[in-house]
Amino acid sequence: MNRIDLKILDQLQTDASISHPELGARVNLSASQCSRRVQRLEELGVIRKTVVLLDEAALGLQLEAYVTVTLSSYTQKDVAGFHERVADLPEVVECCSLTGDSDYLLRVLTTDRDAFSRFLNKDLLGHGDVARVRSSIVLEKIKRTTAVPLPRT
Image 1 (cartoon, rainbow, N blue to C red):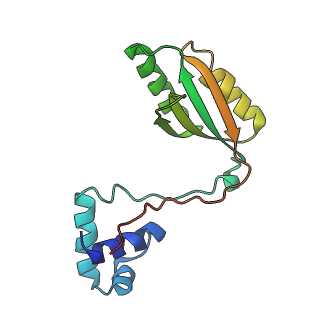
Image 2: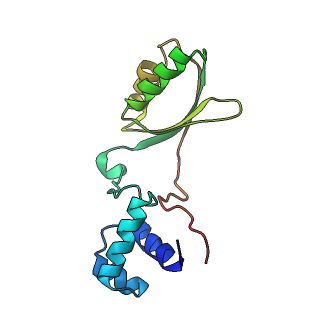
């Protein structure tokens, strides 16, 4: 990857719907050159996919929480079952395994406190594989970006 590729990626992270002629104009390439570079970045897996970002609040998702989870059992069956259950929960928009005191960190979106309570008690707890949860409700979003830091040229 060179400096032009990084410029293309920077522009696409800001607005992936930009046309190749407009993108080319912003990075000083022809539309066809730009198109070829984008296609190559896709083939290399640098660009995984193009998505639309939705506004949570506009969709009624007023409560965002980060939930740490500690499992009660670490058998392959229990861990796999937890992974499958979490993957099927639409409220969980991100799940990462962790080092440290907790096993997982979940980012959860729900409509309100009642929905969050139902999610915790019905979907997360009560399956015998979770020993402890701790949740923190987001009060204010200081920074949220989908852009990854690009190498500086």
